Length: 99
Image (cartoon, rainbow, N blue to C red; front, side, top):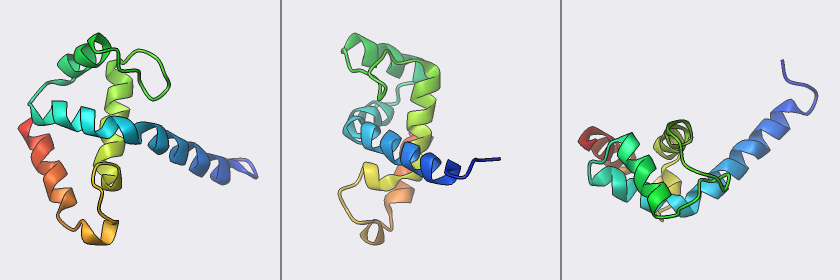
């Protein structure tokens, strides 16, 4: 059970996580589009010195969270408003299928 302000804080935390992930979305999706597996993506992100949204090293767990957020928030990886991005979900599915 969430406290009195739990829902508000949860929503703020989710918004902050999405805000921190937004600049990384093109990089992550480009790697996914190349067909890299998650372990390869983690290694490349760390080798390139790209920090995780929490400003630390990448691990399978935080990459998995990032990919899940990207899959459910296509506005992070498209510059189109959600109403104009009708085929965005299909594009993400194609990228995921390629991996």
